[in-house]
Length: 634
Image 1 (spheres, rainbow, N blue to C red):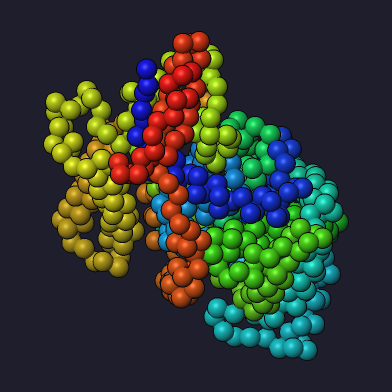
Image 2 (cartoon, one colour; image 1 turned 180 degrees about the vertical axis):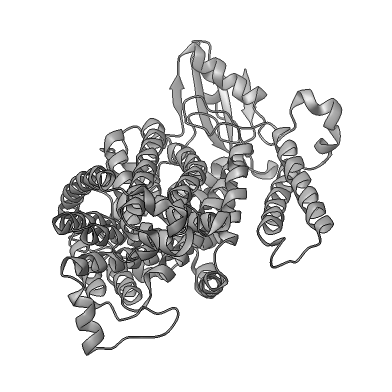
């Protein structure tokens, strides 16, 4: 008795992906990528990445220039939006526990071109993120010495008066990035120990800031005499939210480290949820005490926390805060400089980026060329660009990556999956396995007969039978496309309807109604189709609603960014497309590799009562080999 499951395309795609990832495991991570990280390790990794990157970089700049004391609301909204994206990352990290993060997730679900664009934007995220943190690092160190470093540079080098450039060249920020690049290129053993030390110091300093900050709080600083709680209104809160997204990019590190987790199916979702909650609480509490200590309009955007304690006469506390901020930002610098070359290496290993970045040093087992080249580029950005311009430029790349990962979740849920036991990134193994449990047999047989992801639910066929007239998955594809298009239209109407578009009142409500109706209709069409359901792996609740809300909110926040940010981002995308079509598409390993033979699955129940899964090649009728006696004898 045999049961067939038509999942050849899915299996071929996953096998090819495993073959692509094999060189990374063999050459660079042979001794380091072991499943050794616990849930606590991943949680601390995410907390260190999020708190260190945003707390000392964003709080002052967003409070002074965008939201005022309502910066705490900006952090709260950004945390909710990040939670929707984090759930998507958690499902992918649990199901595909391999290094590569958003690049790998998009590669698996959407293909090579979109994966390259997301990987290209992840490079931008790490470049800008490292430069912004280094710029804030130098600002806090300068605050310890009463801004003598800045004054010396402006006196002897001069000041610049260009809108997108910094006020003065920050040689200190560039120098620390070059030093950290040289340090990371020596290997990961010592840098890992330093990361733990710096993270412990940073958490203690944050607790100190919250306690002493509430003691020194002055509620008058939120009064109307100082501009009120939300001097820039709702628009300012949302603009601050778009920028504050940068504060929560650290949970991406957890997904990128899922290959090293002992139990990624449990550890990754728990670590992402706990670390995001702790980081959100820290941001909200610290931004609250900061704007209560000193008036928001007098904050120093480069070193707001330390400067606030100095101005209140607690210079010793300002020194502690500055030292803690330096420790926290050291962890982020090391994390960025360690993660960035790995993304570059993954793209180069696929042939999508220059092969020189796929070379690994034989002794240190790190991609030295990627570390040095991108370390120098990061140092140049920190030397020349202003902190606020860097932060705004970073958020758009992060939001786009979140949007693609959310869309990838919908694609993944409505695709046919290979049955349990088949080789896939989450559970690599042999192509044949013995399953003796009765529950295993029932599960596999039910999966082969009943699971049809992407097809219309049987109960709805009498009412929506016309959707079954299209090819398999066609209705889902069209519904997802309409969902994204209507989300963009709806957000454009909400953001620009009263300002840039100058719509009449009836036109505004008509577009709002039409785009909202198409968005809801697309959700209903997607919900009418069957999804994958895996009981042993974390899955986002309420799909497609949860990722759809993530897409809607991410696009809205992207539209709140300035036009200069969009212009710079567009230039970066054009450069990336030139790299892909000029180099990547011709050297792609996926295009050069001969397609493997298609495969099919067969489940055979033998007289002994065991259930065995086998993988056999499917050949054209003219080339079919005779059936071996062994297939019948057992």
